[in-house]
Image 1 (cartoon, rainbow, N blue to C red):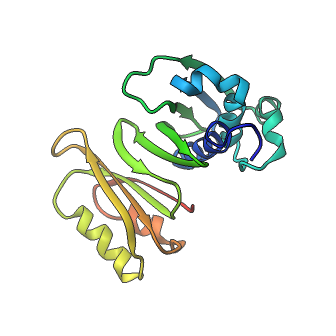
Image 2 (cartoon, rainbow, N blue to C red):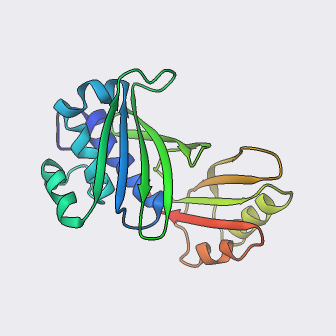
Length: 208
């Protein structure tokens, strides 16, 4: 861990990394908002550099965290950092990301909950509870009967046990988001297999 606080540095790097994984490609533009404690002490604790480092794919023990701003410039990442000290109802160590890559966009909100542990709480407006501690599958799909059963059946056929699962929707019959964390490593073909299911619009997979 580089920095004075695991919550403000290691957790912030992990949140940046998770946001990068959810985007699914190299981020080109980023709007980042630090809330509450992150906003108040973020610069002194290096949280601002840590979230940028995570977006670049660095790990919490990477010495380049200290020069993350320069690294971002060299990599062509355009970013804006904002601080909001009164994020009502949010965890003290919360950050939100609005990311754009070459072909994709996403919005991710998460918090650092101590000891380097994190929780992603929202993806593109859907409520989630993602720890980043397990291999993960995220699908965006039509809210209709049968899709969840199809996905879990395909995982069972491949011997994949579900550690945690959550399905979130904004309105019945419209788009829904399913988040699955598994005990086993995900097979390489699973993204394509799930993407071939009717009414699944997007599949994201990544390891812990």
